[in-house]
Each structure stands twice: as structure tokens, then as C-alpha cells.
Length: 116
Length: 109
Image 1 (cartoon, rainbow over the protein chains, first blue to last red):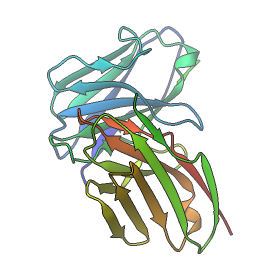
Image 2 (image 1 turned 135 degrees about the horizontal axis):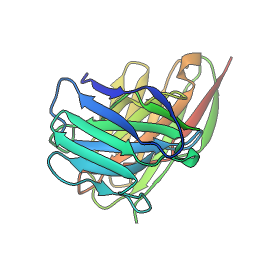
Image 3 (image 1 turned 45 degrees about the vertical axis):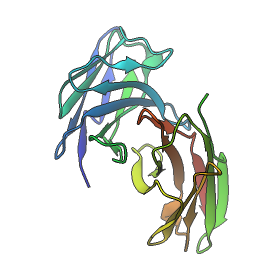
């Protein structure tokens, strides 16, 4: 199947700093990318949806100025957590889909963010 | 609103069969996915149904009834490695994925 590469796999940062997470589709054009957050023992929570070349659509309650999403090309989307706080510590997962309604979503490996 | 319901947790015995149900109410329907997620890892694709009926793939099968807004994932010959969360996701009329909360499956020897 298609491959989505997410980097880094884990990161520890100090409170107040910013962290960038990359999501790349390696062998297909990802017209849509999704960013999720998952707290321990909880379900995936969609943060935002981004279409290549357009501004991301954020879910209710997600601060767009804090979680900056860029989807500048058909193979790369980035999520930047700005001015991170300990409560931002979580598992962040990206997924990507190609064009067409029946295409499955391929997931990145996820990024474990710990803010200290 | 849009809603997907799955049982929170299920327990089954190694070697047995288990059926995980998923009911949905969404604005439109363009298919239903099942994913498996082990703790601390990203979900992995299991199946996709868009037409009514049963799709079989090895030990795993997925069933869909669009008129009933219902799907199930059937796991046969359970193995310990099948212990994971199983996520049901529906593609709505805007081609967005709507996720269920997942069913934690515990396999006992």
C-alpha cells in the first residue's frame, strides 16, 4: 500500500517553544491531509483538514493560531505547535488521501510530543 | 448531527470468533472503513465497504447494510496479536471521514 512518512516519531520540547511535525506521502499525491490528536486510551480526534494549496479547515475548539498547518504541495503537510504547553503533550497523527471518495486514508507513524 | 456507535470494549478467547458492530447516522454515505490500531501506534487499514454485503479477507470479514446504517467486523481464529482497538469510519457526503470512538478488543488465552 501507499506510504505516508511522519517525522519526527517523538519529540521533547520546553514549554513556550514551537515544534514542527512533517507528513509526507511518498508514492502518491495527497490531495487531502488530516491531522489528528490522540490522548492515551482515547479515540482519534480530528484537528484539521487541509487540501493542497488551500487553507486548512479547523475543527471546533482547535486554535488555528496555535496549531499552524501548511499543505503547500501534494506530498507534504506540516503541523507546527506554537508556544507549546504541557497540556499539548499528546500523540499527533497525520493521514493522507488521494483524490476520489473511496480512497483509503493512509496514516503516518505518529509523533509523540512531550512538553516539559 | 453525525454519529457513529461502537462498543467500548469486548473480550474474546484465543481461537474463537468475535463480531464488532458499528452503527452510523451521517449526512450522506460514501463508504465505510475499518482500521486496527495497536496501542501507541497509528491505525492500519483493514477493509472498505461501499456496497451491501460481506467482504472476506483472510481471517477478517466486514459486512455492510446501508439501509440499516450498520456494519460489523468479524474476526475468526483469534490470535493474541489481534488485541487492539478497532475503529469504524464513515465517509460522508463531503467525502470526510467520520470516526467512531473505537472498540478495544481484549483476547484471553
